[in-house]
Length: 177
Image (cartoon, rainbow, N blue to C red; front, top):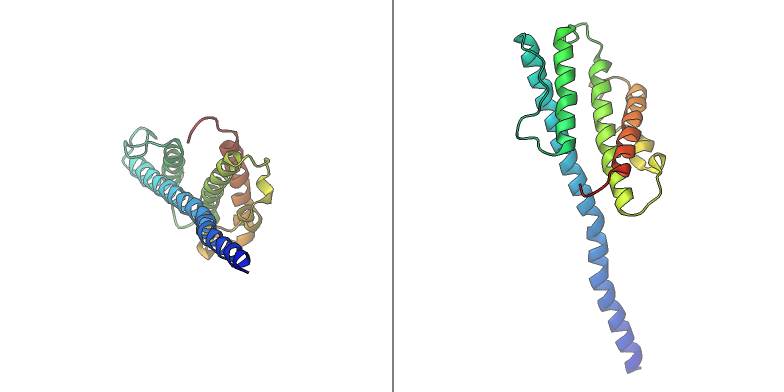
């Protein structure tokens, strides 16, 4: 009977130690992914605003990110935002007649790309097979969607294209992040 009690106690202690460690592993990945996505969105937004300001001031196009954006993903997001902001002013797309989905397409692509990049990196680091279409974010295809960005159907199409592009890049990266 004592042996049975000791085995039960040992199992309970082991479960009590392992369960919190396992439970905390996934939220940490989500937190890191969310933090990176937020930084990329801010880099894109900053680039967009600077692109618009340069175009309004008739400045020469200069999409070089500020010193604040040092990570490759942030720099890429800044350049994408800059180009979109600059082009919107130059081509008059920021006028009232701009179809709202033009902005929605940029947002959908950006959200999809960032989500795919993180998922691809995660799968590569975990030794998972290359399967971008198996991820819930890809299947849902609506992360970041709001009615102001256009129809959900159009948003999903562009989001999924961005997700696959980001996933491929993240999965195929070499070296540390």
